[in-house]
Length: 386
Image 1 (tube, one colour):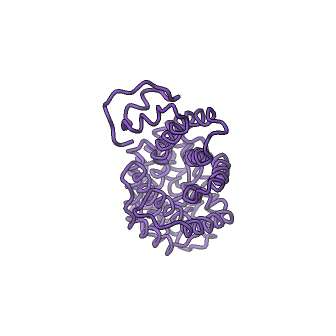
Image 2 (tube, helix red, strand yellow; image 1 turned 90 degrees about the horizontal axis):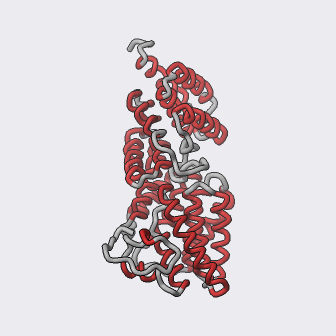
Image 3 (cartoon, helix red, strand yellow; image 1 turned 45 degrees about the vertical axis):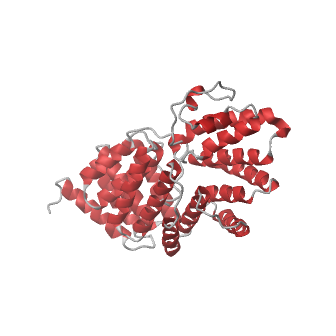
């Protein structure tokens, strides 16, 4: 998608608008416009596979997938099983990006069945790798089976001559699984392994950089390294912003607001909180980011007040699962959004209440950390003298 041509668009035979074809290479356009529906469907799936899994690409991917469905429908029983499997895998990938996890899981199961029927081990690996991150936190037992199945399939495949984006998907799956299981040493190792990959350069690489930046932020946050965590989150925010991925950007900005509040920089905390709710997200369902690994998602918030409500739920989720780092980020982010909503006294009350609750967490450092933020806020408001 990054290589463009200004040549004329040939007469259209595929069920796609002509403007979709303008930026494609001539060879890709001719394949899409082929009278052979199998060739056309495969070419359109190539286009979809090149789209990064940011929420901002859901709409264009859905358009292409609708055209693929039409081509597959016209083929009927003549449609190759691998083409159906690729279509279902693409549907699953974009459904996960849209946080439509139930639909995505169903499509991925169907894709696995079709891929197994076609004897396509590589596609089975791809399907498993793309769903592992989104299932790891909520369904650890079946995800563990998926990880074992993925590794078993990889053992049957010959090593590739050069890294592909499938290798990147596998690496991201292992990164997400290490984070979900709380194995920080493994997470560090998997991030280092990813760093050694030399993946093809296109927009999918930007998404991989986004995901690994969040995983690095998680590693630093859980190691109580606030500065490096903020740097990784800012890198992720820049990538999300460049790709207009507002759902992802909202959650990253919320975490940066939390770190700013912990540092006592409440002006920055408010600025990031307001940026988080400035643009509506593309996702209709909440689902914590699988690489950041914290129980936080404010993508549906359209105001600072709505974000406060969603973060209050995040605080409770973090408490329920015993995630001390998630509790700290959610509680301090909530204070930032209270301030952005011009409710300073409620921000103080929320911090004091969170500090009391944090005494019951396994990490004894969380309660004093939240209490320190409350004291910094008192000084910021001029209530407590330095």
